[in-house]
View 1 (cartoon, rainbow, N blue to C red):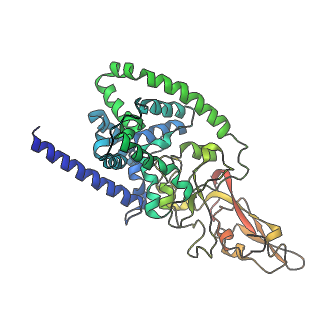
View 2 (view 1 turned 90 degrees about the vertical axis):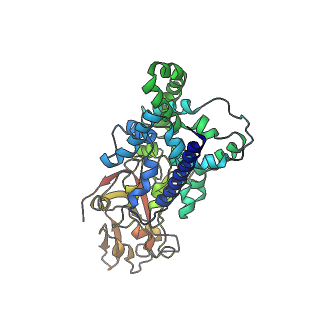
View 3 (view 1 turned 120 degrees about the vertical axis):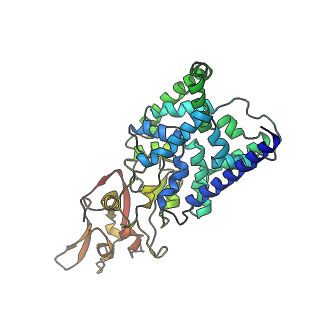
Length: 410
């Protein structure tokens, strides 16, 4: 290839990379396109697709969403790390950041193979440890800054990108060359196609180490960090999450659901009451209607968050299914309730409940007392966000459930 041809290819490569970087930010920020496209770039990772499917014992992708990671994997079988050099938005950011570098070798051992096989091995016992290191998920975390949905807690997992940029000033492209498990997956895919025996010999140390680390560490995490009995206050998870343990295991903290929620209800908080593996998870946090007059609860007409998860931690729900999904249960705090405690004529929670899950118990003295039917309640939070009680705090609160379920329709 002549010098002119190389220059043309280089210019074309950067044009494609910058265009795709802009597209990734645009889709994650919720441009005027279908909300489901917000998962397109995080969904490109075959690492997340494979490990999440193994961990959940099911292929969670439909035919349409199966195509992007399969295409990326087939591209790797054909051309190795071409995805990294032309498509990956995280790789583009790191390449831009490495233009000014001291060219020192801080990290000499390539750890990406060890990380990859640890993730795969841990997935065999249902806990894909370190899957949050997937570069497409790490890049997507930064979009919470663009969309304004970030919290301090959500920025902590997002520190990986700026940390690698700083390290890249010392050692160029250190993430891509020494740490990225997805890049290793692409690289090994081509090696196993062209020279399978040599590839196995060269990778056996990483494979064995990954098995020795991933299997026991995943098993211990499942037994203790994800064990039952640790959820004194179960979190309210986005509609479409199944159980607390399954969600914690599958979530890569890409925060696509945080970006997708049009009402700002899905947030990331640092809660010390959570198990270690639940830290930095997205949860539903209901808002006071005075602070968020447009909504303040998870409305029956919205299923955006369930359409964007690339890891299968949140399964897609139709609007009809979302309206029958119990994500939590409301509870009346009688000592704070204006009707129960003060004898006032207040039935706001019953009036605003979109699912008729709150009824009024009429006392002999004529008082109407709110009662929650837990078999009907969806945990949407409308009662909480509209409760007028203030003296002892809200008189009705919503707690999560260990496992979401479908309840009978209205």
